Length: 121
Image: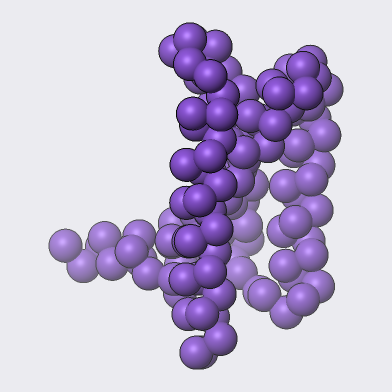
């Protein structure tokens, strides 16, 4: 079970870590906001992908250095979250706010815990 340890750690790993959830859920939030604004899928996907890539660049500028594989996975998860956030509510016939509110809470809590962990390094 040692191979699962990085999945449940806030330490940067080669691929997945707890920050991966933050990237996935944040992408979902962006997708849900785009639905709310009634923005078309493909332009929203392109803009969201650019924003997600820029976020990784800003992390680098602020001294958060990750492996290229971890950065790539973060971008892929953010985009996957966007697609899920944009597409799932329509498929499930559920109000996007029923997904948006729990995701915002989850990202806020996870990011706060992650930030506290980062400060203790």
